[in-house]
Length: 196
Image (cartoon, rainbow, N blue to C red; front, side):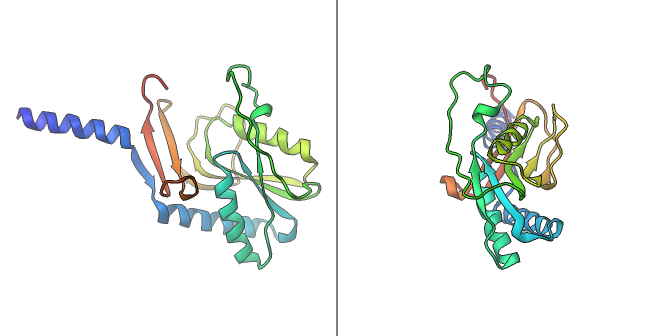
């Protein structure tokens, strides 16, 4: 009996550090393909649509969506990346801010801009992204695509396109790993350690 208790304890610790798999590589691809088709259906004027990935989590997803939309529309879907660090409302609490590049190689004026991020949590990152986009110009409209919506909104933000809704607790986090960053494609639900 003691051996079973030890085995259970070790497997529980192992499960907590690895997390629960929510999406594997195939599920991520299916979600992105569905989101791309939803974006195409929602935007009849495909030539006026441009995608912007929010640094860091949204940039690779936006790039993948741009490739999928290019296949659907038979023309390039413009794609850029946006850093929102200096537009956040919690900048004073974050200490030293690591600013990433913003590269938007198209004029947002009059376009439908689809902001892309990996995880939607309290809504503060996308609020900052809205501010940052408006510093670039005045789009005709802005839509929002997210791979995972985990709930716990603090602001009235709702994505237009969602890969997966995942109810979470505040002591959990969603970890998105993508092949572009050196790992395999996966989304896991993980318990926060006491010092996070």
